[in-house]
Picture 1: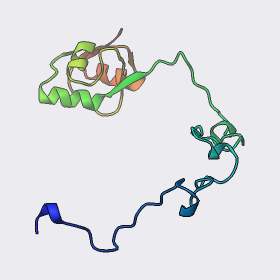
Picture 2: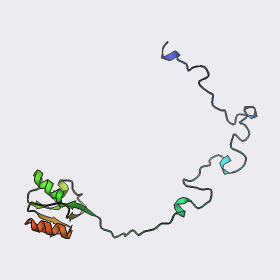
Picture 3: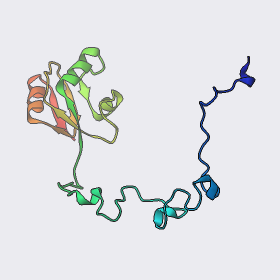
Picture 4: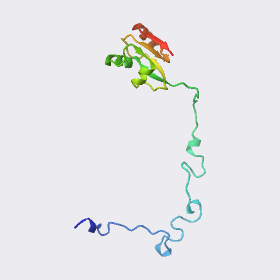
Length: 149
């Protein structure tokens, strides 16, 4: 026995129904599509979400809330993250946007906000777009400087 003469077991494979091949097949005439109507025609395709003319779900469900088109999205960076960079030697004394981008904490077009979670022991001069009040207090308590762009 080899690959070219393998055959499936007798009776394991059924032949497909030959649709629309004459009345004698039992599937002639309407070719299993029923009688009249859109679905019996060739080229029929319904839109995604179409519910037979009933108002579709995505239009029935109420839309709510408000999206402010002028919203400014800030990339938040916590103090403990800055401290871990100081401990690993990646930051020395000044932290600017370029330093944060180089360490992959922010993108080059991001607005950056320093958040007050964690503890900062190092004396850092940080220059970013915004600070929380607790972050600013912690930076100045450590002897550093918080400069807003």
